[in-house]
Image (cartoon, rainbow, N blue to C red; front, side):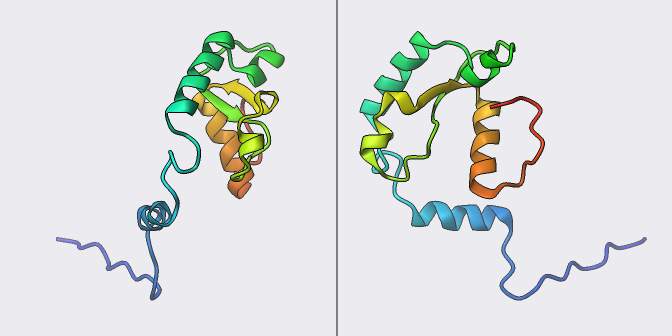
Length: 114
């Protein structure tokens, strides 16, 4: 019976799951980064007032918002973090796409605008 050839990896190679786990171990907890009870309460109130994905709505699409996004990444700046002018309601797909583009620029042609 045919066998699959062995997979050879360079020394020090890590899978994406291993890299993610290492990154998660090295970063602060969500509450230490500002996403504690106060944020949960504020973001829930914001979503209640803004139930549709704002970037989609600007282009004529209507999708339910699921997360509150910081338009300009706050990177630990608590003044920018709590500035409501910097918030926008987004659905998860748009938010994940925007975050991935900001963090790694590997998505060059989004299907939905953000």
